Image (cartoon, rainbow, N blue to C red; front, side, top):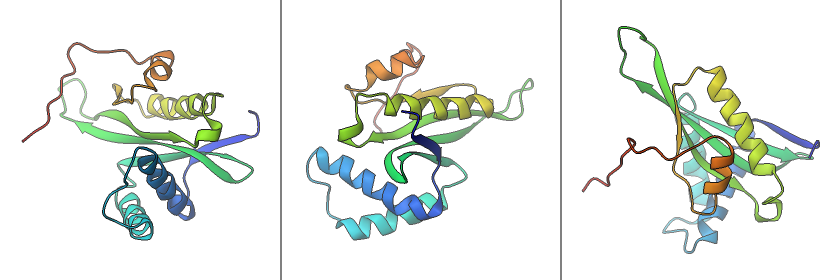
Length: 153
């Protein structure tokens, strides 16, 4: 595991990251109406446009991207005690199947949460797959009875 490199994705790696996102959705069934090439082009444009609010971290071994995790930074309404408030949301954590269940995702999550601490985020949330819930619990996440959600419409 010492041969892993975890860092912010570089611009030239965004196409590979888009490929991981495509692969993830394809693993769950039909990826949708866009072909892979068009999706990659649009994903890279989106990632560049949102780079200030969505930080992409990658885990690599020998230069090969094995996984990704995104930290979305969310401004919060100021209070008299704190004018600069932000929360984070962990999004789109994915590790290639052949590297799962051996700590790669955990190491990636450690780096993302370390960045959240360094940024002074008030809290970090995640909307997890059922399979990944135990991993998030091991990293300090816990259910919150006050965090509610709805699907508008």
